[in-house]
Each structure stands twice: as structure tokens, then as C-alpha cells.
Image 1 (cartoon, protein in one colour):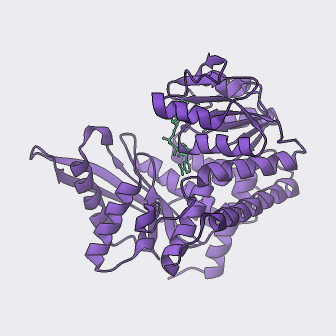
Image 2 (cartoon, protein in one colour):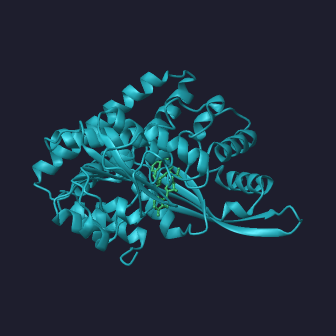
Image 3 (cartoon, helix red, strand yellow):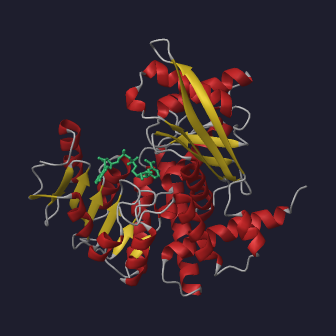
Length: 418
Ligand code: NAD
């Protein structure tokens, strides 16, 4: 995409945009634009053939004013210091907009995991766990899965930490398997918050969700669950895409059947309930009421944004709009529910997992979903209140105004030490 920005610069410019509406000193804002610390480490492990290989790894602890640092660990060749710093900042403002008592962090290893055996990945993950040990802990920093990591890696890190600390502390990490202390409802949580936020936006804009048309870009965990749940709310899913292409049926299709087709064939393409095959870009520019980008960062640049016809966008993905696309959509009066609110269901149910781990008492899925509903509705109400009070043009700015104020309040109430 032509107008992709350095992610850390994007984060800082989002904070500057919001700071213009806040009565907070420049010195405090400056503090809130930088991570408190970043671990950069080199992990050297033995390959299966006996050779050694070195990998660069990072953990950024952006802000801990509201609680322990919280955020995932990703394995990807494009992981960089700036990317990890930016992602840890977004986590800080995500936990703040949904008002859960956690800060923001993020980590990653520069690796394409597809090129390594499971035994090599285990050695590498445990080596990272050993480096992270002094930094993490249920009251210090609580990692979680992210791109290319999942329950398996989280269980390895938990086991490494617990062995070195000679303790049992399941709350040191979230996103665990149910048998290792995971939470009911975690898998569906991101798609669920995406559609709760969309429902609230339709209500706010006086638009009918019943029969509204929906396009979903990306049919993975977040996207397909969002499609299933919005269909259950009475909307009509008319288009979906994955990395192989897109499908479209103006009369709508069954999102569960489309997922079954993807499970069988590897893609939504060719699903018999769709009338037409369309390109990935077509799915983003169809004349629909709601667009849910649930694939990658920077999926919509300024040129594509010019062609977007949706009235509401609920960002399941992190950073699916480039900053230039955001500006174009603002000019077209598209109501964009920002990622830090729309996809915050994942971190919110991670928070519930941490609470349950600490209580050693586990909730039924119904309770998880009910608590999540309350948190997302409250966050949306706080966003709208600020959006109207400052007569803002962009809901994203409103979300940052609310979130930055909360972090700054926690910092100022605590005072500086030493
Ligand atoms: P996933 O890997 O399960 O799914 C990603 C989907 O996007 C796949 O279907 C893939 O085929 C598709 N895709 C890739 N390139 C595409 C393209 N060019 N056009 C259309 N589709 C394409 O990942 P996920 O867990 O669903 O995450 C998706 C997004 O949501 C990411 O931005 C992630 O950071 C964000 N997110 C996820 C969670 C979570 O709990 N899963 C939480 C917060 C944010």
C-alpha cells in the first residue's frame, strides 16, 4: 500500500490528534508517547541438525499506570522494534478505553515459524520465556498470543516460568487452553465485541441492523465469528473474503455454511451459497451498510477508501486503515468504530481469564459473554459522549481522548516516583 506509515509514528500522531482536545500538559503527553522500557534480546538455540541459530526478540512495556502490562507475543519475519513499540502503545489505549485495570505491552520474535520444527519452536519459546522471567508475572506483565502464536506457545511460556519460579501461577499468561486455565468465550470474544460495537453504532446513528447488509474481509477467527454473530442479530452477510479471494451474494448467505466450506477446501471461494466470485478489493468497496475488516493492517489505503461505500466500519483487525484512508473516510462521514474498541473483546476476555486464574474459580460462558457485553457497551457510550461533547469528526479521536485521559489520570493521581 502506497501510504503505509511507520506504525510507531502513526501511534504518536494519533496521540497528538487526541491531545489537542485534552487539558493535559505537554510533558505528560510526551511521556504517554513512548514506552517505559523495551527489552531487546538475542536468543540462540540449537537447530535439529545441531547448528546454532540466533533470533532477535523484543518485549515492549509501554505503560503500567493502570495495571500490569498486557499484550501478545507474535512470531513474524517483519517484527521490528518500532512495530512492537507501536503495538504496545495501542494495547495501553485499548485496555484504557474498555476500562480494565491493565496497562499495555507487546512482544515478538523475528522468525517465520513455518520454517522450523515443533521441537525447535519449543526450544526458542522456552528460551524467550527464560529471558522474560524477571519481567513477567501476574502482577507485572501478562503476555498473550498474537500473530502465529497460540495456546501451545502460551503453555510453554507458563511452564517455563512456573518451573523457574517453583510456583503455580496460571495468571502469568492468558490465551491458554481450557485445561491449563483458559477462559470460556475467549475464542469468540474478538468477533463478539466487533458486532456489539456495530450494533451500538447502528442504534446511535438510528439505522436498522435488521436486514442491514454486511461485508467481511478476512474469514479467520475474528472475521468468521463476527459474520456468524451479526447474522444472528438479524443482519444479512452478503460478502466475505480470505487470502484466496472473495464471495458475494446480494441476497445474503449462511455464514456458518461458508465457514464449513472454508474448513473443507481452505477458502471461502467456490462456496455454493454465493452467486459471484469477487476480488478482495471488491469486498471492501461493495455498497453495504456495514464493513468489517478482519484481516491485516493497512488493508485500506486512501485510494480504496475513496471507493468505500459502507456507512459504518467496525475494525476487527488492528490498524486496517492507513492514516490517509482514515482521513478520506472522515471526509465521507463514514462512522468508523476504531480497533481499540471494536476488537477489544479479545483483551477483555483475557482480563476475565486472569481474574478467574487469580480466584481459582471459573465462570460459565454465559457469564463471560454478559460481562463482555456490559464492558463494550459502556466503552461505546464513553466514546459517544466525548465525540459529541467535543463535536469531533472522527470516533477514533474520541476513543483516544477517553483512553489518554484515563491513563493520564492514573499517572497524575499516583504522582511521580522517585
Ligand atoms: P486469522 O489468521 O485467524 O484470520 C485472518 C484471515 O484473513 C484469514 O482468513 C486470511 O485468509 C485472511 N486474509 C489474509 N490476507 C487477506 C487479504 N489480502 N484479503 C482478505 N483476507 C485476507 O487471524 P485473526 O485472529 O482472525 O485476526 C485477524 C485480525 O484481527 C488481525 O489484525 C488481528 O491482529 C486482529 N485481532 C485478532 C484478535 C483475536 O483474538 N483473534 C484480537 C484482536 C485483534
